[in-house]
Amino acid sequence: MSQSTTQRPAVTDYKVRPTVNFTAAELEASHIARFHELIEDVEVFSDIKSAVGRRKHFHPLSPRGHLGPAKITTPHNFHMSYVEVPPGSSSFLHAHDAVEVFIPIHGKIAFIFNDGGEEEIVLDPLDVFSVPPHMIRNFKNIGTTNALFLVIYDGDDVLNKIYVDQETHDKFAREAAER
Image (cartoon, rainbow, N blue to C red; front, side, top):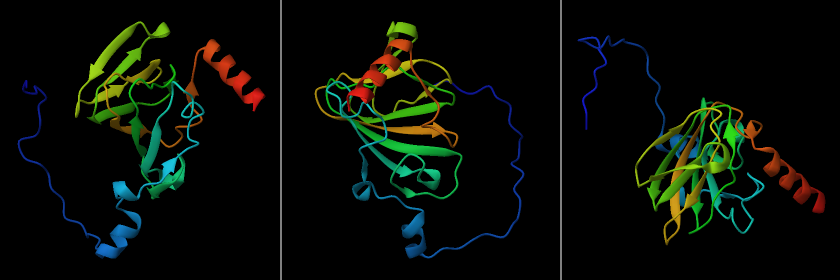
């Protein structure tokens, strides 16, 4: 691991301020999301039930429940989801206005990116990929078992700012018309 060359102040300037206190029950009620209690969001993205796009989304933290059912809905400047992906499943090529951070927990995830998906990078567990805004990409489980990763979405409006190419847009429009 390389050392950082960023200059920091020699001493952190700590401040004194009043703190807040909670009971364990208060924290459990609105500030702690237990993984085994999370509710699967079966409607968050239109492709999650397709043969190629099969995956499960669980949202431990989503301000105002914007992404779907979430245990922690208090104000934050980001959203969090766990995504479970079966072997061979993937998302479609898409982009967001905001940064999206992926952290695989287990499994092997390939990220395919750039127009046409001509580049690929593989992440191992606990690697971190901070996807720049407007970069077209998708992910695919290239392992032999289910993969699980954590996604952190920057900002407060994730769902209304998803961009796809014209071919993908037309495909989704046809599928919606057939329903």
